[in-house]
Length: 498
Figure (cartoon, rainbow, N blue to C red):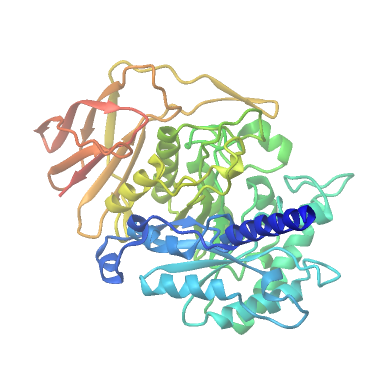
């Protein structure tokens, strides 16, 4: 009798566990309680989106998040439709029902999904077989015809599938006398075939590719067939342990190591974007746009170093995320996707689990609020504009010192950040901030700002991350606007002129 009772108890516990695991997560009502009409009345930015993992329903993701994403003012989101999920039997293709569900829901709200074609399929002798991959991609494009316009071909081949399968140096450099790494050669061959097959069948499909580290991408530019069918290139300008104005790749020492220049000596993200533009133009691909399909910072309580990533508090994550977004948009990037929307796991010590704008309990981090505010400030479509702003630092802080990375020392960027845009209604907006790290132990630096070529009157000033509205002392003389004692800190100051 005791055995039977124990067995029944075990079965009951197992049933409960299965039931909990299979239960669809429920977001709080205040996160999803929007009508389509209400959402369509919300301002939307055509430039910003979020990365999602909606297919990971067992891990708390749900297409029920889409109304909240749209309510933030996001016009797009980036979601995978994986090869192994579409082709489970060789030659038989079926797009998962959850993919249809989130695409239909997004379209109803006026959003434009970006679908990524991802990774390998063990049904094939070569798991990254280009013809097999192209057939799967073409099926997905045909399936979503009239609903989805944007498709991204693969993701970080230096991190996933190609390098692990074929081997070679992370930076695309060859070993033992070879010019290029094996994985890079295999990938550009794959990309050339796949994109050609797609464009042959679906010439109107907007193709984005290929996110990889800056040295490998610049080496891959030497294979024009891989790029000729793209409508946009994807970059992932994570600053990792640096402030958002800089990246770990650039400068003379890095150029010598990787055999290619990926940024100026200041290691700036601005120069990295410019060099990508120059490479594309040199190939005759002036029409190809630059998209950021991933960038972000994480808030884990990291107990030991993991790669080059640092962990930040919520204020810093919010400031770094939005500063990076502004820099990219100001330098010609058309679309910017925050990585990612929701924390991917429950391990507070794991960096990969803590990139989200939302916490695991679905409550927003400061980065969520800051991204939403930036969407409101840069609503609809904006145009980068050169407005002359002189920044007179009254008691300049010294630069933050030096960074040591891969046997190369370089200084933190200390150039005042000024980025400006013209908005849909003709008004102008200017962002000003001090580059470098976020500090909580110093009084904020002050500056006098002189603006000489902006049209209209100053109608609003505030801080981007905290949302604090400011009343600043202004004078106008000889068509120049001077703002006295303006805060010059890590939270961008915004100025709106009408």
